[in-house]
Length: 362
Image (cartoon, rainbow, N blue to C red; front, top):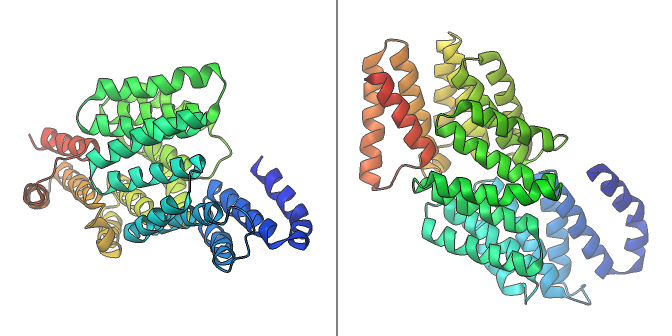
């Protein structure tokens, strides 16, 4: 379907270019939004920048501020792909100011601001923004945007240890999605329920949800696909199916690399190292871990410090299982000390990794 849309846009391009600069701006924004659906970072940046520049030059005869807001929202997504949270926040603030009552843009900006707040561990702000987004999405009649807001709210409930409430939120999305045969909504709920089950050690339940998510999202190569493959990689690794784990993990890594998304690249490279270690390739795994931790320290020591700790806890567990307890205790002790010094509450994935390590270490 995306390819058909792309073809129609390209066939109409020369007609729009001849009609007016206003139409060219709208065409560039449509192309950028299509590129966003395919996670094509360079194309998003190119088309959104072109539209924003034209707006700044006064070439938009109508709705200049709303068009400018759409472009800035898209550029903020690119900044987040690159790990530039400050740049993304600045663009979103300008987009919010320019939205001028355009509800679709306002909701999209709220959702992205909530995601950034979640990344930065500002959970009260993330919840407030997500609730606003869900309420405004209801006014707009956008089930997809409401489901994305619910996903953020469920993740926060889970982080607070309210697993039952998190599941209930996802179920509230899932039931009507199935009735309406809305795959785009169902995949959000199935993926969320699968991740919850995975890190609550309900592996059979996790497989049902994640395999269904993969089925309904077949043919896409976006951020959601990356997440599904990555979680299936974690699941297969936990179940001891290392070849399958490696296949899913490498697919997730390829999708993250294609989008040049630093967080995903770090996360899946680290999982690939864990799997290599289990396959007896200790030297290769140690090189991979070292490379991950050296290549992205600003990212991993900033908003993604929890990912940094999670990688090291998994390293410690692997060393302990390989009877190198001294190395394992050295790593785990450093992580625990850093968490205490930071004064933060461990999120569910880090808490799960620490629980597994504690069980392994006795």
